[in-house]
Length: 126
Image (tube, rainbow, N blue to C red; front, side, top):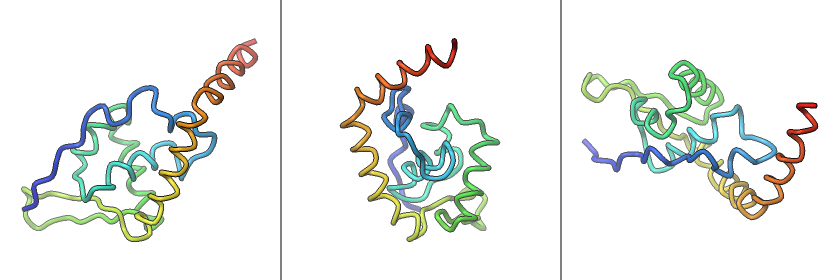
């Protein structure tokens, strides 16, 4: 059995630049799930640590959607101790480079994005 480093609970802090990106890969949580799987397969319970803001139902739906799109594979092990693991497929791995480019762009333009969001909110509430 491979020993993996646990995912940190603060992997996606509240002010993560990914929340400011004006477009997404898939649904709201897909890019974060893909990021969690970047270093190898993970069990559902491992994914829940950094994705604590995602309900279990929504995480399940997101994983199923990624599996349906061919980006994530699901492996149910015969040994119950190993359970079910999710991993990026080669197609899913091919998204990592463009995702990191988008994250770099969001970090570079963080102030502009934040200002735009703050300017929009008062207008929206009026």
